Length: 346
Image 1 (tube, rainbow, N blue to C red):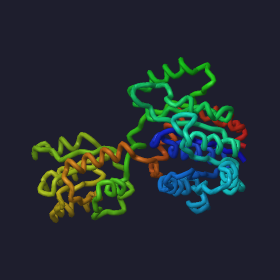
Image 2: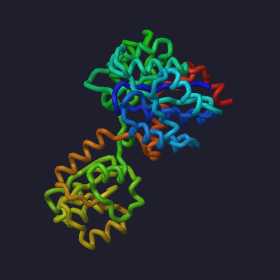
Image 3: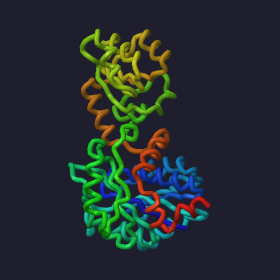
Image 4: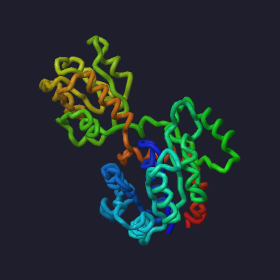
């Protein structure tokens, strides 16, 4: 059995998305894939539990989510606890994908814990970080180098499409012949950053009424109600797959939004939709979210939620596979794990 440890030094870098994409690729190559997201030290388990539930679905795992994100606390050595948790989920598996959070420097507690886990299970380590501040170079190199020979390479994620060519050129020129391997430069993608209608409602404290089965649909954009009635159709037609936020006293703008590509209609101010708005939404199959918050507060809440969006929707998998196939060096990862593409297809 082989362990692949996917690690980042910051939240939201894209570990779970990469774990899902690589895991599905390995399944496609005929490999039996397991998953582990251990909770170290005093960290909160909620995020790991949600990721484990999602990965259980993605990889078709039989284990209960709790077994996939065990707490590695207690008096015994961390390495021993990590090895036991790994052995438990690795039964009858060819590859186990592990998620972890290292620190921003090699002396941080999180980094030292990650080094111990990697060494305990003899994992090949892939680190991932999100592009930031116009600097294409990975920002936490010293932390990554602490993995030593276990480090397979680094993935730079969420690069704006307009910057992709420049970032690829600069990274290649800087690290192309260095000891640090760049395994991929993956562009930012609107679909991967999207929220489901249900997640959006939860973030803004709203209530979904009508067409609740559409709560899994993905919202890629957000728009506020236009000020001019006559421009409603033209205005709302500018963006697709969107959430539209309109005050409860503007049924005219609510109706205009429903005539365009809208994932959900958010009615702010605490009022109920009038009958013909509810009827039109039902005919169009568009759920309505009711909230007492102001339009401005709802827009800010949705934008903040989109910025922090997590990869936990199966609808994103097709797009993810396309992006990784184009921008991730799968052969280098497989070779680093001791798996050739030819062997994985056998």
